[in-house]
Length: 387
View 1 (spheres, rainbow, N blue to C red):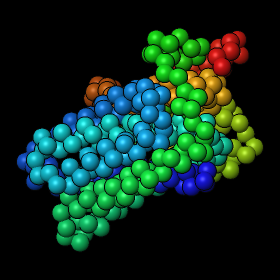
View 2: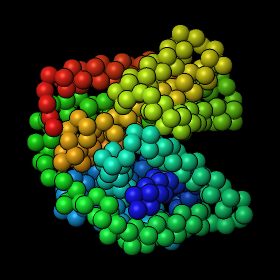
View 3: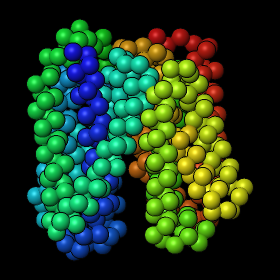
View 4: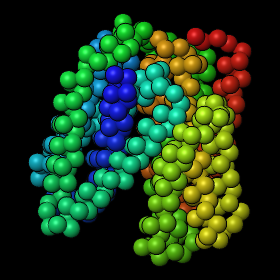
């Protein structure tokens, strides 16, 4: 039965990734139909990300009361409701309304399943689970592209993904008793912690900032890579769009490989290795303004990012104990989403003043800060016991 639950979690991570790139893929058509500027996509994205942060912070309370199985099933249902709303709306403001359940569901699914996997499965599965998110994120735009190529409305792209989410919701609901029978749940040895109690734990402030830095690195590189290649290196727009994808290709492939590397290295070593590779990739971009080296730098950055997030999450129960891990992972996830939500637009404002060529230097600053925080976190850990 434990393998059945693992399969469900893999499917849930694919489902998390599937809708993430749909909005960007369809927005040029959607904005025309809604009669709104292209910039309005930022409001929808902000609502989704903002409510994802909120639900990540509330996951500890929900899981402590209802258990992971119920929370996951209801959260997948909320994402399905949001996607169905997207599929049947023809009004921009209604789209904003449906972004609320979508964001709430996505945050709870992510935080609760990350904690469950960290507590019950080996590190390799955490890397492969996040690789599955990348697979889902890659499949989503292909689904939307196929729909639009076939002459169908963008709404159908959301509808097909929503149908998958509805089916997954049904399976999750039927599987609720299995979660308890496998774990002997007893509320999963879980006790709710207030935010004050969470931040009083040794090293939590540092690890939360690590996730903020990582979110900034991943999102700024992902959002601004194409602009950097065009405006700073003079690459044409079509090639730049394809080459920028090397960063995400590096993350997805890196996580597939990381699962095997975890058989030899522990979570701490994996995180250090990832941070070192990120620094190497950025130094290539900072020191050499050569197209091929910058492209390789983006790829190396992606491979470096691959193990950082899953291995830090997987290390949390070992560091803080199973009873506290959901609370800590909730604030870790919220910090990550805050980084991905607010720091890319902030960099855009900064780039208007300093130029897009400053991107590698900014990312280098976040990377060095992240590495310093990680070193400080383990120094604090060695001097205290949080379990």
